[in-house]
Structure formats: structure tokens, C-alpha cells
Length: 236
Ligand SMILES: [Zn+2]
Image (cartoon, rainbow, N blue to C red):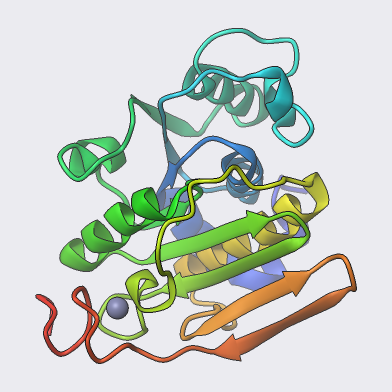
């Protein structure tokens, strides 16, 4: 039995091979980044690039389990933990705060970007870059019991700029079960996209509210005036 025998029927040997050759950049190594990278590594993705600027604080540990008992930069600790999990996986790191000037260097060569950031401003930097390079972007976000995710395919679906609005600088409450569900939707979308299996959340927004057990998807529409993907945007 191979390591992936329990999932190979879902994706086929060819799908599993595609995963082994795929590179995913995980932007942000907080709660979402911990789970997304764990799930992608476990699924057999060939290369993961981790990008983050921070070090873990005590208040991160209710959801960023990989950092318990470790000191150092999040990218270094996470890379070490993922290496223990998947010694055969290639891991790259970018240490720094992602902005429009370094986003290309931060994300490197990749097939998909996982948006695991914690601010709208940073997400929009990823969104513009993904649109300009035609790279799919798996978005996830949480705020307390609320979570959302969508898979942005440049040229085909609305982009994040179409659905995200003004930045809210307050620090959201963060509850591991919500983080893990949203990250699971992101990882599931990424694996399905790479293997060509099933449907991603492309063109839809997955939303959940754990407080009252409401889970579902709604169709999202392109903002015709979107400066990134609308009529007036650079990609149209
Ligand atoms: Zn847009």
C-alpha cells in the first residue's frame, strides 16, 4: 500500500502524479497557513513555499499548533515540521512582509497561491499579482465564528477585489475549528484544481457561521468597475 492509496481512487494515479509535480505558495503562516500547508503536504504536493514575516506569540497557539514549544521565525518552524511530515517534499521559504514590491520574490514560481493572510490590504496585493500572472488564488478568511473561502481563477471568475471592501484593521477573534474548516476548503480546492477532479468554489463564495451551524455557497459576480478584473481593469 502506498502512502496515498486511500486517496488515489479519487484523483487517479495521474492526478496523484500531478500533485507530486505541483508547487503551491502559502502566503501567510498563521492559522490558515498552518492547516493549509499541513493538508497539502499530507496530500502529496511536490513543493510548498512558505511566506511570512513573523514569530509565534502565545496568543497564536490556540490555532497555530505547529509552533507550540518552538522558537524562531514561523517560516523556519513550519518548514521544519513539514519536513518531518514529508521528507521528500521540497520546501522553500520567504522571510518578510509581503507587499507590492516584493510579492513576486515572496511567492516565487508556483501553480497556485494560497491566500492565508490576515489583512485585506495584503490579500489585495496577492489578488493583483495573481491576476497579472494568471495564477489561481485560493482565498480563505475568518472572523470569529464566521469563515469564507473562494477559488479565484484569473480571466474566468470574479477576483477578490470584486468581493472584498475596505480594510478593517481590528484583530479578529480566531477559533481553531473555524480556521480548520476554511483551510480545508482552500486545500480541497487546490488539490481538486491541480488534479482536475470535481469542482472548486470558483465563482462562488463558501460561507460558514459556526455559531448556528450554517454552511453553504453563494454565487458571486464580477464588479464591472473592478480595477483588477472589470472592464476598466488591466486584464480585460
Ligand atoms: Zn475583480
